[in-house]
Image (cartoon, rainbow, N blue to C red; front, side):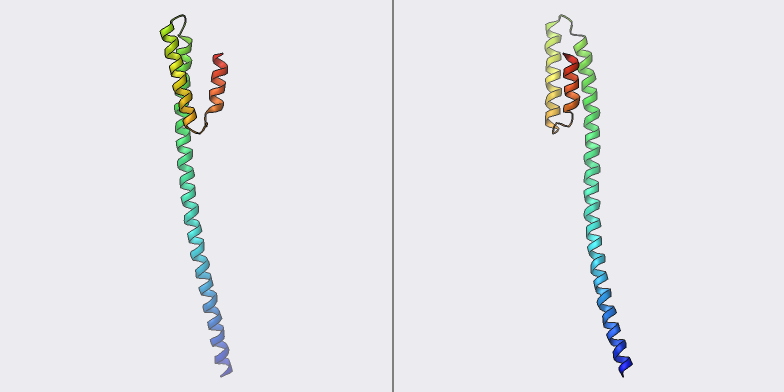
Length: 110
């Protein structure tokens, strides 16, 4: 009888441990899902930033070419300034991600 009672207690303890392990497993699954979502968002942001940087480089080259071709032509000069304003406006709208590039460009222009 005592052996049966001990086995039942052991079975109850094992059931409790199994339930606790299942609860921990479920919590780990929830945490992993949250981490996966966070990682996907970060990858998406990195990809978007890379695309924005590529676009900024393209604009910088256009501005550089336009600035070199200005010469004494006031219309070209104004067009070049408008391009620079548009470029800097884009930079400001992207949380200043490209501000160091813009500073180098402006310094180069001076």
